[in-house]
Length: 87
Length: 413
Ligand SMILES: Cc1cc2nc3c(=O)[nH]c(=O)nc-3n(C[C@H](O)[C@H](O)[C@H](O)COP(=O)(O)OP(=O)(O)OC[C@H]3O[C@@H](n4cnc5c(N)ncnc54)[C@H](O)[C@@H]3O)c2cc1C
Image (cartoon, rainbow over all chains, first blue to last red; front, side, top):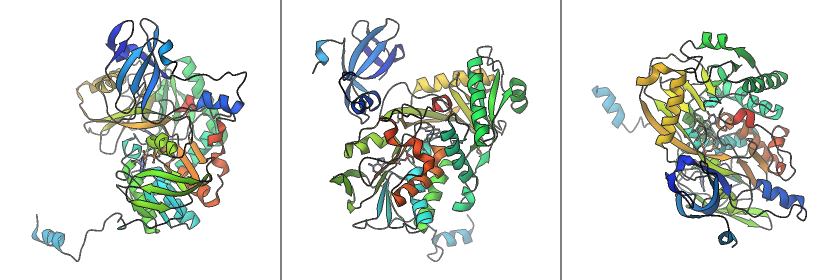
């Protein structure tokens, strides 16, 4: 991956982007156990695969989500956070 | 070629000794199976046989021995870490390394060079002072030096770094060394084999059978093995192995790249590391400059290397050594670094009975090869982790007891 599609600014060189880690849902810190909270804070889905990830287009400050295969480094799509990830 | 030499080559009497022969097939069961024929897995096998008399062991390597991060690293060995737990652990490794050529009867080209961690800012100097005090406290030779001493040791260095990031001082660590990486893997492999361990190359583990939370066997590309003890020592493949037993870990994989220049006459005695410029460099016994930089910026399971890396690295190396502008880079490559949130390894027992983990070695694990092998062997033999690696246990995360080693590990290796 040398280029990435920012949903606002179009296709830009990868050097303009910052990786923000996998998209994950946060458990309610008031409700969940310490163990579940530690799992959320530290554990990661580290095996290769197609993942939803946070990316920042840093010149414009745009955070968005990209779906990427971490084995082949192919980006399948990118979009602004919203309903689409609520799966 | 002289006639006599040719005759020698073709004679059946003087067969060339193989460094390590592979048995024809797997045994149906082993007392322990080690996944990964890198330095860590092979060292664990060697010490299991040597220290604990366990020899009914198989090491399974899906590629070739040392073909993972062991054969891709820049071979810096040092113990000037930041936490007392880390310093003690890596110091034990340095001490094993110092006698390892003798122990394994192979010349590892272990070369004590002296290691400078350069500081370009006052805040970096503060970390150096902190590290020096922790090191001294634990009995490790480290001291803070000024730029005059650096210039004296390495007159070729542009101390102003082309005016961009003048060097104020450094942490100097005299025991810092480099060593021939693949020989470390071969030496441990031969040592283990001679003690009766079976080593299989081109043999991939595809599954681990767990029944009632206990390891019972391993599925491999060469067939099934019944066993109650499995050690995963697979560095960049750790998340894949842990997925086989549904064990969550904090490890993510990011590529780490390195390169070498064409060989030159020896001129660089020391190992130099700059956190601010994201580079480290040493000169190998072959005369090549061995150089590396920071991690690639995002998760990826691949060993491709990039132009961005050599470009960025070269520009920083030229800030330090402008006279290298005509020197050619001849090889570049990448390894998959298994990164942890606190830059400390994950070693020891896991919630699954008989499944042991030696992972989270990121950009810094080669120097730990001897001591991690010894510690994991003790863990498997006694089903209990030695005190030396207690701070590196997997459960430290859910206990919120991290081992903050970032200040000493991030670019330093
Ligand atoms: C560019 C680079 C520079 C580095 N520089 C330094 C340095 O200067 N100093 C330092 O201390 N550390 C350094 N490191 C880190 C160091 O290289 C590693 O932490 C260390 O070598 C890990 O050794 P290992 O034996 O655990 O893993 P590896 O050597 O990676 O061995 C793991 C083996 O497991 C095998 N395997 C994986 N999956 C399977 C399977 N399913 N079945 C069978 N076999 C499998 C792999 O093929 C591999 O051979 C560097 C790393 C890189 C990439």
